Image 1 (tube, rainbow, N blue to C red):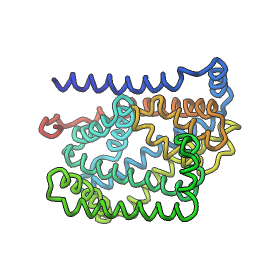
Image 2 (cartoon, rainbow, N blue to C red):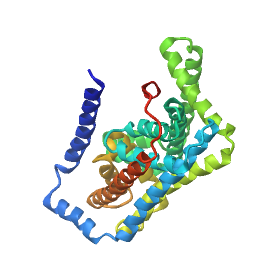
Image 3 (cartoon, rainbow, N blue to C red):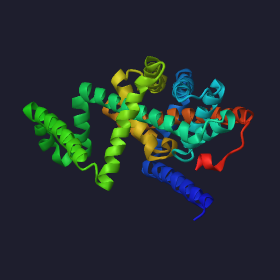
Image 4 (spheres, rainbow, N blue to C red):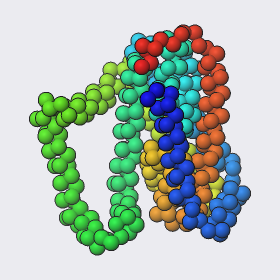
Length: 340
């Protein structure tokens, strides 16, 4: 199969999945449901809704500055605007096919600043590791401060038939025992992997885990490790503000707490993994999360579509403009050995 045909098939499957999710989440909507959702678009306060995407676009600048720190530590000095534009292009392409943007942003820097693609991909992988750890931290904070609410989600919504058993397991000493058991299982799993690290398959998994740890440790070797950490915190703070400030656009969501915003950030982040650009999955996820906080699903679902639509429009607009700008700085011919 040619590479072009393979990419076309991937694109069709990716977009097809997004369209399928849209159909699954809207096929049972009644006329009243549709009217409620349309009403959200007409009565929302757009000054808050526009502020959200603007903060989102600003977070890309901070992300670019963080990436530039990693590139500098690797011995490269790309132009700041080239790095920023490549990040905007990355997010626009990720709307079409997940992870396509990551490779493209590295290729763009090769064409503008002659940075080998394999080197920039290495720094990009470290970025993604940091992002993964960051979203897990958000999840851990949610689990600590919203424990009962999240447990009720699994107990009453997902595993309703086992509500009594789950209630017993998550109260009193049973809850403490479960936490201790999970820690013991985790440590035991690491010990198992370490002892079998010479095995081919186990060895690859162990190497992957070691690579994550080494990647995170390499942050301390940067010229400005504290600045890198500051940028990382700012990126995720801006991600949080993107959704939290948008709450103010509707009277139903305006009273939402900080933890509701964190829950939308955490679960909404995984929605972007399920489908390209979160198509279909993000609005449904936001609707389900806000339902936990007392917002009717139709309101939360419509709010999710509204936020997603404006954010996606901003990503496309900035991505197209950035590609035009960065393409004007192409100075190097593509070396196929660099991008395979």
